[in-house]
Image (cartoon, rainbow, N blue to C red; front, top):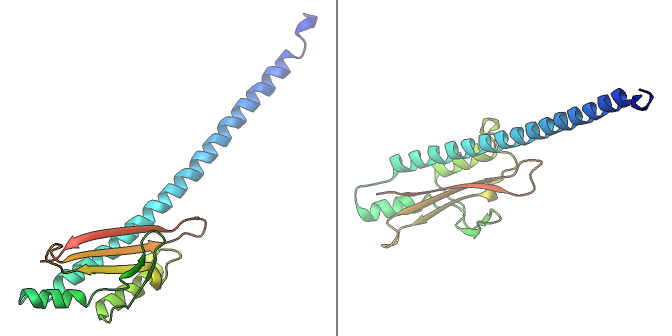
Length: 160
C-alpha cells in the first residue's frame, strides 16, 4: 500500500491537463468559426452590392438597338486596367451616376460592412466585342483589419 501513495494526486493532475487541452481546442475552434462567419458575411455583402448594380445596369441600358445597347453599356466601365490579383485597379472612372452611387455605397456607406475598401478596389469591365456578347465583369475587393490579404468577389454577366 505504501507504494501507491500519491497516485490519486498524479491521476487528478493528468485529468486536469487533458481537460485543459480540450478547453483550449474548443477555444481555438470558436476563433476559427468566428473568422469564417465574418468572411462569409463580407462575401454576402459583396454579392448584394454587385447584384444591386447589376440589376440597375440591366434595367437602365438602352435596348432600342444593338449599337445603343453597346454604347450605353460602355458608360458603366469603371477603372478597366490594373491587377485583379492585388485588387489595385486604375484607368478612367465612370461618369455614370449609377456607378458613382454604387462606388460610394461600397466605400463609404456604414451599412455596406466591407472593411478596408477604397475606390481603387472596385472595377467594372465591359466587353462589347462580337466574341464576348456584351460581357460585364463586376469586381468588389476588401480587406479586413486582421486579414493579411485582399479578398474579392467577381460576377460575370451577359447583357442582351
